[in-house]
Image (cartoon, rainbow, N blue to C red):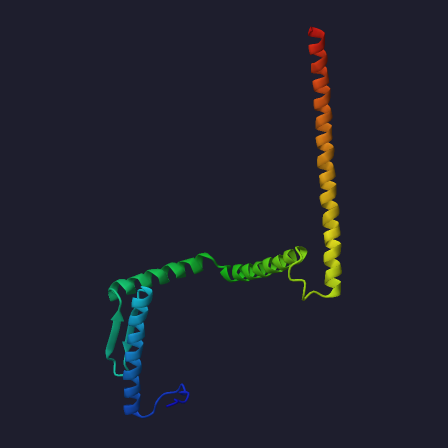
Length: 170
């Protein structure tokens, strides 16, 4: 038997409405219980019928769960008041995440990964960037060699002077 999609509107027939409420309430209580058991979640469910009848479920103490909820709500409200630019910070964080993703894509392309979707112009730009990077690395390496050679020449002079001193002592 295939059920049709239920329209989300008030059920006009009072008897049908009560039967639907009862079935859906029981299903919701069952789901709350399953969630608490399967996931070790702290669950509290409060339902008031249209007649004002209370139905509740709590995986632990209802009072403790409600107090925890109220503490959390107060803390969250306090944080929102203390951070008036929270929305701006969230936008900035989203922009930074996009920039990080873009940089990671560029880095992967420089490593030769994910080039299949690149256009000819992009590939040329990557090649030029690699040439510039290679030139920079070579220049840095050349400077390091020069410094090392200068240090070795200084050490050679020092050792030659020490050698002369020892030769004079002998």
